[in-house]
Length: 186
Image (cartoon, rainbow, N blue to C red; front, side, top):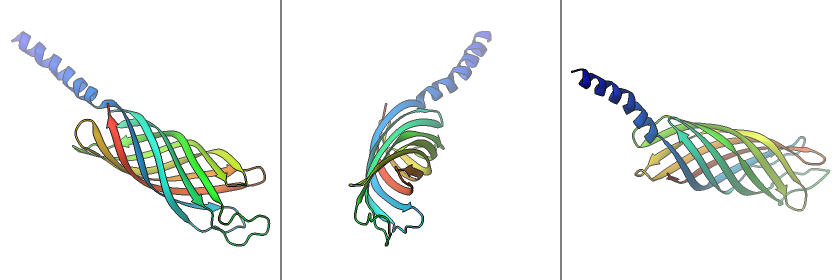
């Protein structure tokens, strides 16, 4: 009887640890989608531009949290009204991001909705003009659907906020991206 109780207690302690171990892992993936950007710079007026975005991600998941490295690139065309000092209308803004995100995951069987937030470095290179690089933050939400133990489909929406400093001015770059992609889980 004593042996049965000891075995039951050991199993009771080890069972949650074994299940937690199953929820620890690495993942890598790629994604693509749409990026909507509306630059801001007083007193200039800009129109919203939507374009294709692509990127890569990799991270480590521990229970209901994941730390992720993320990279994306999008090429927006600048569409602006009349501005006396300079004219960027029709120029391309090569916009990229490299940073860290923290996911808070709410697992429901094969569905894994999550909230995400993070910080990173944004680079804006306006064709034939200037290149600026600065830090900014993002936040959003997503849904990961497991297709077995190794592959999952991820759909995510994020808002990125950054002000990039060029040599003579600062350009605000509000950007919303909606993406879909695949993750490989290890």
